[in-house]
Length: 255
Image (cartoon, rainbow, N blue to C red):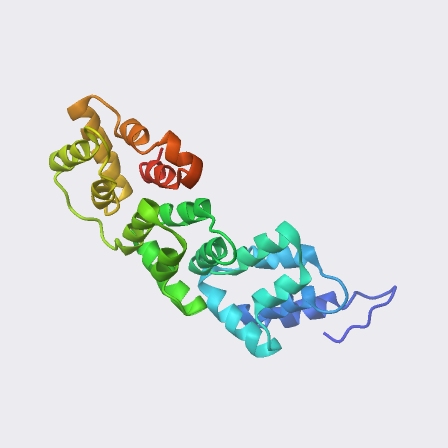
C-alpha cells in the first residue's frame, strides 16, 4: 500500500481506504467526525453524512470513544464548528433518540419563559414506554427529575395534564361505557371538571382513545373532541393565560 502520488501513479486514497476498512466501525466514525471538524474550516458535507448515518446501536459507543480520544464531547465539538439551524439539526441528530427529546424538553424550560408548545409536541407524541426512557435519560443528562422540572415551570390544569402523562407508564384497562358517561358528566352543566378529564384520558393509549372517541360518538351522537374543544375554550381567560391546556387535550385526542 506504499504509494506515492504522482502524474504516473495512483493517489494515496487507495491506501487510506484499505487502512480505514481495517478499523472497527465505531473508531472509523469517530476519526471521520473529528477529521471533518479539526483545523481550519469544517467539511460540512462529510460531517452531515456521518452524523446522519450513525447507527442507533452505536450512538453510545461513538460518543464515549470520541470523548476518550479527543477530551471533548462530540456535541460540544459540533456546536463549536457549526451555527444557526444547521447546528441545531446536527446536534439533535448526533444525540440518541431519548437524549434528543431531553434536550428539546430542557430547552423548552430553561431561561426566561416556557415553550408549552414544545412540551406538548415531545410529551404527547411519545408512547408510555418512550416517556419512561426520556425520564431516565433526563435524570442522567441534567441530574434532575423531569417531572419536578415540568412542575416548576408550568401551572394549573396544563401542569396537571403534563405530569399525569409523564407518570402514566402502562395503559389502564377501562370500561368504555363508564368512561364515556364520566366524560359527559365532567362536561355537562355549568363549568367543567378538568381533573376528571385528565384522570380518564391521560392513562389511555392512542388505540384506547380512538375506541373511546368512537364509543362516545355512538352513545351521545356528538364528537368527544368537539365537546372538549367547546368546554376548554374560555374567551376571557385565554387573553391572560393562553389555551395551552385546550391545545394539549386536543393533541391527546389526535385532533
